[in-house]
Length: 273
Ligand SMILES: O=P(O)(O)OC[C@H]1C[C@H](OP(=O)(O)OP(=O)(O)O)[C@H](O)[C@@H]1O
Figure (cartoon, helix red, strand yellow):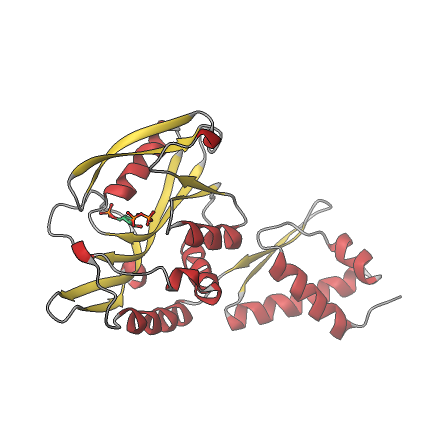
């Protein structure tokens, strides 16, 4: 039975939001709604315009018989900034300061809505970039990597600091844990990355940058390519940071160990490029 435009628009939008970065043919939609391709094209034009005006994302059209549309999620810089400013206020709450200048984040990194927004914000930074995988290190980076990988529609791989028989054979690198100046090891299953993969590195927190640097070393060992680094939050670090090029959503600009308070502001994600 032919489906009316209002219903098509609702169901089509839902389907597109549920299948980011996936080529969907007009034939698929024409069959789904028993409608003409010309009607489907008009529907998609309405959705494309609304998505663009609302900052929901891009609806790329691929011409030709094997063509169709691809929904690319994004968030406007203004909306992202507004969200991150609110987050920075939450992080500036009392009793988040941990020894060594670390910050307690586990409660935030368990919130589905925060992870959806953070995943969308980080993915938006790499609009138009070819990314084959998102990489993070267990444990607290995992929910962030999962969220970003959803919006990019690519797998995420988890680097471990401990050996697990269930990971099969692995590649490992030693790295200097910036905060403790000690040599640590991290490893990744050989099955995780193909040579030449373009990899986005994410993590929850960066202090000395040793962890991120270790992951960059692993990417080299796999003869893969680093596309970029984004961390949820970064703290000041007295020493020479191991990582120079990265984005952070939040920046812990001040720490008061007496009052156990921290001052958090939006990170360099929002700096003009
Ligand atoms: O920039 P660096 O000085 O290297 O520190 C950042 C590391 C340390 C901390 O991980 P941990 O809390 O040690 O590990 P987990 O994520 O498993 O809790 C954080 O999640 C980053 O991965």
